[in-house]
Image (cartoon, rainbow, N blue to C red; front, side):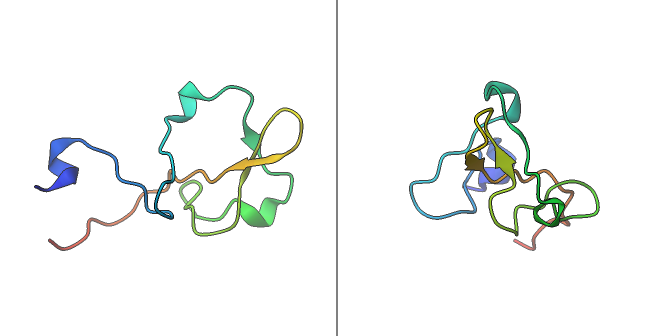
Amino acid sequence: MDVRRAGLLVSAGPRGAYVLHPGDVMDLAPHPDAGRHGGCCGPDGRVEVNRVCGCGAEAAIACAAKAPPRAP
């Protein structure tokens, strides 16, 4: 089954990682270290943690950059 066509999300991270929609997570903000934001069209998820929670703790890796489609 091609998960992209089925509309399913698969984590590109380590096994057991959670995939969440950013709108479902409260109080996340961009990391204060701008070097962690990466990507020309949004965060690409290739750098370290790039989101912090309201208390300042590193909390998530956002990935929202455009990417070319992968070959099947």
